[in-house]
Length: 193
Picture 1 (cartoon, helix red, strand yellow):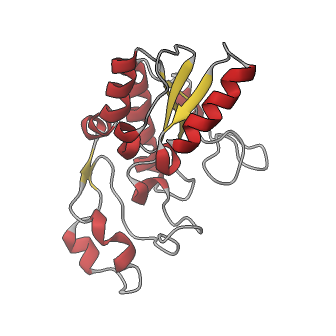
Picture 2: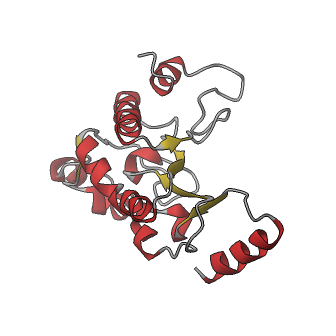
């Protein structure tokens, strides 16, 4: 909040009408949105959040996370990982996934998790934008596509603008590094499904 206050004031000195995108601490997390201190009496602000929940699905076997090497089950919608499935996992991956055992996620729960940014935007009369969301390409395909369908439905229902992370890459892309389109995902994102 201190950094935001100082940066915002410096930008406003030079650009009094420019729209400034502001997000909360910890990678624009929905969890920290209620602690965000938005400059008052300025309607040229766009509030932004990022959303990669549930992390076990969105960052499945991601090399830069504690899920590196996890290739076990993950389910969406529903219970991500059952106790029975957890008990069959190798000991070395159990610590990284223990918190996901018997935890349920579905469209309604995703919307519930968005409530802090939604309420902050409503109370301030500011627009809301999801500046990043996505599922890594290593994730189970059926679960990933079901999550994307729920996300796109929620964006439509709430009127929240959004941008998939990202367009072209080996991770999270709509198009692979070699230019091959992930057509099923593109159809969901562009509302052609």
